[in-house]
Image (tube, rainbow, N blue to C red; front, side, top):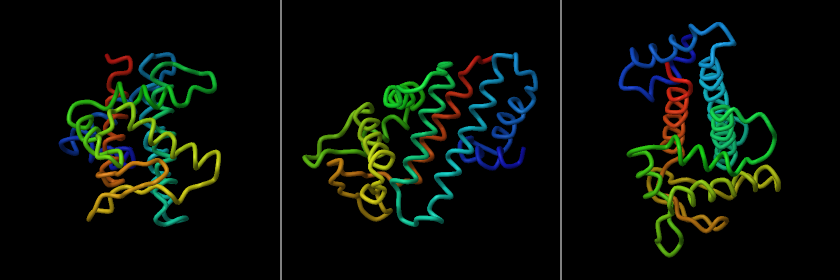
Length: 190
């Protein structure tokens, strides 16, 4: 259980809260219990986000590759949450993840972190669509070098899509992980 606790600890106010979150789900052993799917969601989020973290060892500085795995995670969590077992509808489920599970201050942060080149902020759906287009460039075109998040010192002006990003990848990743926690906690809640 330690790898789950260590991963989720940053998304909770303290280690005890993360431990409680993990232990409750790890205690589910009967696959027939509706909440079992929440346990799968918890595992999948950790696995996919960890792939995003690890990919920089293969291709350092390629945030588009990291973003790919984070969006695959968002899509997967939304599909699991909505019991969608078919193929397709990737964009729709990424949008659903952002609209349903990114809440409160995290929603505000995203909506104040992505701007057109004319300095117009993107709403949450436009942010999801923008990031999804980067994901599609990676998946369908093999282009994994053109998109960048804030580098910690200055916003990044991207040209495909035409957007200026005022959030680091680490901050964005943390928001998505908290969205995953939101989905897991809401799924068939006891």
